[in-house]
Length: 194
Image (cartoon, rainbow, N blue to C red):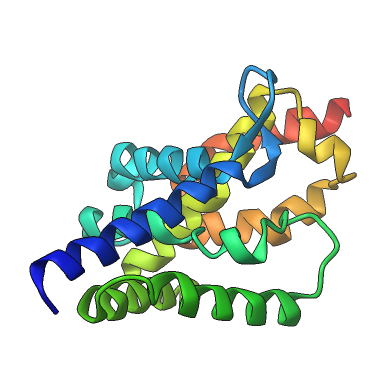
């Protein structure tokens, strides 16, 4: 591959990644002005990880965590965003995301395509310390957005405290238990009032 064709492939991937800004999520911005898009979410959770890394249950390589978080939702360009509290077929969604990962990461030069795909697969498997923490941060950001916005998407999806605990809390506790413990009083107060 020539330098020119390598750069062309990388720019093609980056141009495709711009489409993530058009994927709207269920979560609103903290100020309730509008729904967040997946590009904003990816940036925000990368910042969350950078700021909150000291609270990981085990030491993490923050550069790897940030890379995972920057690419983890690129599959939504093809597969769409599926809210964690929404009604969907997880097997169908996983298959759609696998195909999306093949296509989107396949735009890159082979070495980068393999590296990015391996990092995405690691995030999805959530077995390494880096991926466990990355998954926990991916789950905690929408919780904080809901707490700040008055529970907008929790209300929209009729989320119960038990659902939040099983679908979100267990994952956050796995990678960052002190963060979940810190949020519990606010979460409990919100559910007590709503």
